[in-house]
Each structure stands twice: as C-alpha cells, then as structure tokens.
Amino acid sequence: AGLARLQGLFAVYKPPGLKWKHLRDTVELQLLKGLNAGKPPAPKQRVRFLLEPVESSKEKELTLTANRVPTLIDHPLVRGLAFTSLKVGVGHRLDSQASGVLVLGVGHGCGLLTDMYNAHLTKDLLHVLVRHVSEHQHAPATVGRTYGESDGVPSLSGLTV
Image (cartoon, rainbow, N blue to C red; front, side):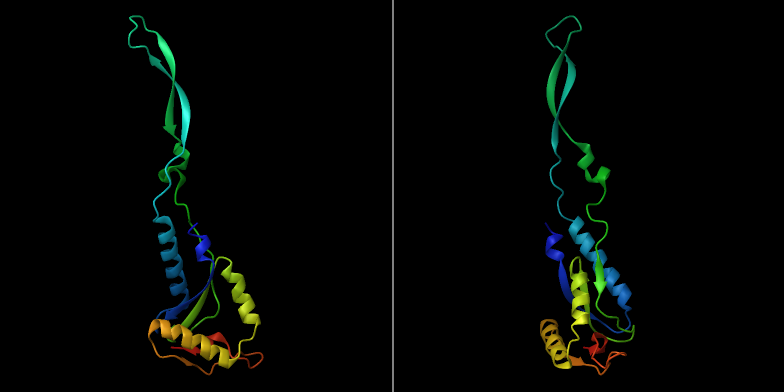
C-alpha cells in the first residue's frame, strides 16, 4: 500500500557540493527505510495437530489436539525486509558544484521522466516549474542559460536555485 503512493515525479533541491548520484541514493535509502519501518502485519496462523499426553490417564496415553501456531515463513527475521530496492531515476544531472532542482522519478515515474524529456519543455515552462518548486522550498529561483547540445532547447540541467 505504501509503495503505490510513491509512484511519480518528485522535485528535490540539490545544494552545491553534493553529487547528484549521492542525492539520488540518499533519497532511495530514506524511502526504503520509511517503507520498511512500518509495523509488520500479524503473522498468519495455521492449525497444527500435536500429540499431547492425557492428564487424567495413569497410562501413557496420547491424544491429538488442534493448536493454532504462527507461520514463521512470514516473520521479518525469516523473510527479511519487505522492500530491498526501489527504482529511482534522475531526469537530468547537475554538476557537483551546481545547485538546483533535481527531478526524480520513482517507480512508474521513471517512464514519465522520458516523456518529460521528449516533450522539449520551453524556457517559459521551466520558469513556471522552478517558481512553483521554489515557493514550496522558500528559496529564490532562477533558470540558468544552459541549453541542450543537440537542438538548442533548454535542458533541465540549466535550472538553478
């Protein structure tokens, strides 16, 4: 249930001096910790028939009794962590000394990153995107003058905050 809510695109501020890959890995690690920190469901119960001695009998008679016991295969110490990997993609890369908004795709959002890249966003739309993100982070925003190498279209790597 928690993983289904983590599908999509997220804007993350990258400060100068931090590599984009380290930021992506940190976000992935924190998301996995959050997903695995939830209380595990109660273990499933199953019925086992056990032989037990009859208390009132002087002879060693045994009787078959039905008992509910937990299924240990679902126990977290046996099964391990519920979430061990999470697909986190980066829409663009920023130099380690650059600061700016890094767009991360999580889960199915990684496919949206490709669609966003292929949409060839205009500089005006980038201004709106950066302004929206900066309003939520309480930081001034500008768009850098970095353009795509192939077609002169502004790339997301030109975003600076």
